[in-house]
Image (cartoon, rainbow, N blue to C red; front, side, top):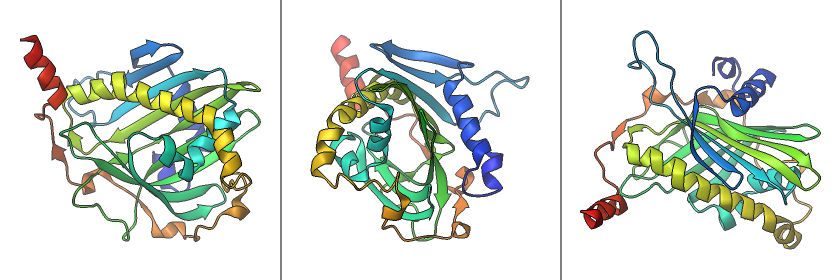
Length: 273
């Protein structure tokens, strides 16, 4: 992330670093691998001091082979905020705040966490890049005085999160999601397992289904309006990037939820006893 700090809007080096991590297989452990869909979590390398100084960052990578939707359509799905309300099963609230450049904006997103954990939210800078057969979207947390943490939500930190969508044919693509986040709390192991083995595959399936349905939906909903492809269409106010700073994890409160038991998991345990 050091290269991001030199300028708040990511440069080519940041996109290259994201691609490298998205395609890397080193230190990743597969937790789910079925039907062309794989979910991995990062295994932190052991240092000479053990893993005591390893930050509490949760890294998860999801890969999906899509054989019936084009890369361009999947890219549109990821950008289209109106359509996201139709398919995202974990979203509480999502809205764009301002744009910083033709390919960068700032937005807010909050999501449901498994009960009884507190729900999370983030304020992020998002940037995107398109080449002939590849689409990349990345984001990371920023701080703005008008959007402070909310009392009923835990403000999480995205260190570098995003999507790499690569065309494999005119109507097929490979889809990779990589999240490096600090959830601002000590999460119990069942949360990490549930996120990688249950929730992530569920969301991937929703994204794929959303891609299948998007062309027909878009025909009925401002079909020519795609500001992520045509910046001149954007109605967002411009913001000077100097108003933003990188959101530091250590400036936010940690929430210890490591002893929280999942109600459903508890019920299962009782049933099996």
